Length: 295
Image (cartoon, rainbow, N blue to C red; front, side, top):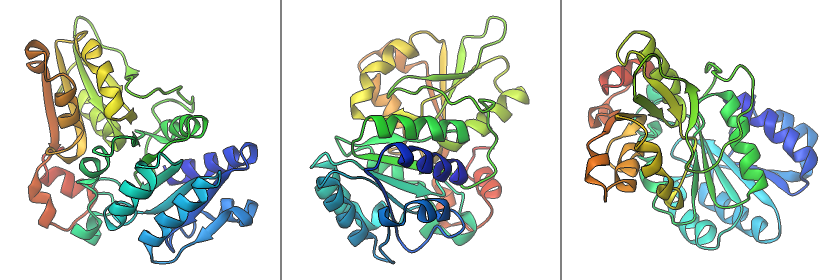
């Protein structure tokens, strides 16, 4: 996902001179294509994420669409006040990019576990969450964000993710499900993912846990996109959300809130999320996902 992100950002920056990239003294071996091509639109703010976000807000107020880039919790929790007051409240075109969503950096411990980030970012009233499930959705998310500049949060995994779109870049819209795999026979179940758990959902279906179920992603979601969920849930007998985030405040909780006024629809929704026991553990992403109940 990181390579798809930087390659697409460079391509978009060729067409949009207002795109800028600000990093928190990391991204080496990833961001160089942008740095080499657009050195005048690149800033290394150092290990100072609060300052990085304030700087990005200032640039955005002068017409730039700024992408801030750092690992997991550093561009979110460390500078939550700056995101809330300087970016979201002012409705500025700053895209906060977090690499290593979920437990991708699980071997580095709890400080790098991005398992509460949805909970933080989705309560910002103007914030659009972009959580692609594969490299093609990364490109689709970026294209939407650049065409619709606004406060946004782009949550990436690391590298090596499978591409389930065969290189086709999907056209994405906030709140609208993106079908990856159609249902087989008479199944009316759907596995609905956001972020890197698309690969997990496909694996679950292939090994028969949800035999014949449709698989969809929801890469773009926000407070304002809740209104689209009831009509989509109503088409299925069961909707199983899968996410690499704690259940409290996560994607499944967001979906539950979106359909909370319809008691019949609420019965159809089931959430698969990480157990909070992973918060005290150190290990590989696969091992921690198993411990957290995803595998």
